[in-house]
Image (cartoon, rainbow over all chains, first blue to last red):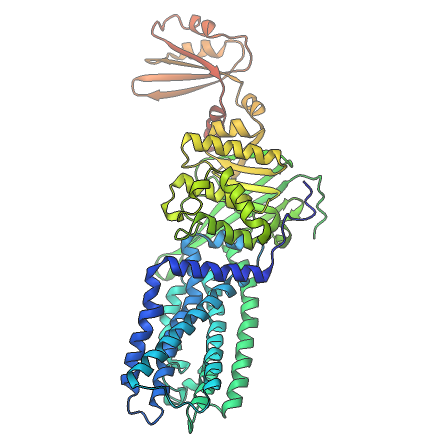
Length: 270
Length: 331
C-alpha cells in the first residue's frame, strides 16, 4: 500500500451535513429534548403574553419577540456550545478531532440543527401567542419580520460557534456559560430593548451581533420604535459586521483551541 | 510536507518527552507536574504489528495519543509514515486509524450503523460505497445482527468491536490499537486477533498496546516494553528472552531454601538468573537458563536436602520477560 494518497478524501460540506444529521438523530433519540424545544416555547409564550399585555398597541409583537428570543436563545446559542460539551462527555471529541475534517465544520452542522430547532421554537411561540390573543399581531411588513427573525437566529448561531470553541478549550466552559448566560441574555436585548437598560451597558451590548439584529427586527416590526442604534439600516450593517467578526474569530479560535488542547492534553477530560 | 518516503519506517521517534501539568486545590493554585514519557526512541517497520507492553501508568496511551496526533510531545520528534505528527496532521489524519476503546467514545443513543455512518462521512468515504463498507465491517467484526441496535444496548465487547470497525472504516495505512481486546470474552478476543492479523495481510501497519502477554507474543514479531515513561527493552520476543537470561525457565517450590542450596543452583551450567519469591510458607525460585545443559533432573539432584521439592520446567514466557524487566526498572 502506498502512503501517497489516503483511501478517501473528506469533504467539508459533507462533514457539516453528517454533523447536522447526527444532531437530528440524537434529538430524536432523547425524549428530554421535547422540554426545551416544544414545551418551553409554549410556557414562554404564555408568560410573555401576560408580561406585555397592555404594553401599547404592538404588545403582541413584543410578546412574540420576547418569548421567541427566550426560546431561540436556549436552542441556538446555548445548544451550539453544549453540543460540543456533550462530545466531551461522551468521549467522542477525541475521535472527532482525530478525523481529518476540521472540527469547525462539525460544529457548523450542530449549529445549523440548533438554528432549525430554534426556529421551530419561535414558530411555536408565535402560534401560542396568536391562539391566546385570538389573532395575529399587526405587522407592517410580515416578510421583513420573518426574514429578520431568521437573521437574528443566524447572529445567535455565530455567537454559538464561538461558544463551542470554548467547550473544546475547557471542560469548564458550561460553568462559565451558565454564569454569563443571564447577563448576556439581558444585555443583548433578548427579552426587552437594550435602551431600557442602564446606559453603561449599551457599549458592551454593541459587541454582540444579536443586539444589532434584534434592534433591527424591532425597528421593522414596531412602528415608532426607538432603539439604541441610529435606525434600521445601521442596525443591519452592525449585525452583519459583528457576525462576520464572530465567524472570523471562530475560524481562528478553533485552530488555536485545538493546538491548546493538544498541548495541555485535556481533550479527554469531562 | 516533510520528505517522508514510502519505504522508510512507519514510526520513528527520537527523545519523546511528555510532561502533564495540572492544577488543584483552592483557586487551582497547587501545580503538579507528571513526566509521563522520559525520552522515548522507537522505530517501527512498515506492514508489521508492533507491540507496546507496559504496566498501568507506564505511558502507553500517552505515546499512542502523541503518535496519532491527539497530543503534542513536550520535547522530541515523532514521524509517522515519514511525516511529523506535530506539524503535518492534515496529511496524517486521513491515513491513520485510532482505536482507544472502552465504554466511551461512541454515541450511545443511536445505532452502531449510524455511528459508523457519521465517522465514514467525516473521513469522506463516498456515499456510494459507504453502506457496503459499513456492512462489510459489521460482518468482519461480528456485529452484523446488531448494527441497527442502539449502542447503549451493546455489551462492552460489542462496543469494543464497534470501536475497531470505526478505526478501520477509512482504510488507514497505519492503525493504533490501545488495548483492543480488553473486556472481550475469549472467543471475541481470538476473533479480534484474527482480524488484526488480516489487517496486516492487507498492508496495514499496526501499533498495538496491550496488557496481555500471550496476545503480544502471538501477534507481535517485535515489541517494546515501556516502564515509567522509558523503553526498557525492544526487540523480538526471542531476543528479549535472552535479554532476561534465557529462553528456558525452571521453577522450584519448597518450604524455604538455604543459601548454600541457592549457590549450588547458581553454579549449574547455563543458569543466568535466580529470582526468589515468598508466598505464605512457600518459597519459589525461578531459574532462567540459557542453554539445554541443565535439565530439571540435574536441578533436583543439586538439592538433595529437598525431598518435597516441586519442579516445573517451561519455556520462558513473555510475561517472565516483562516482569523481570519491569521489576528491574522499578528496583
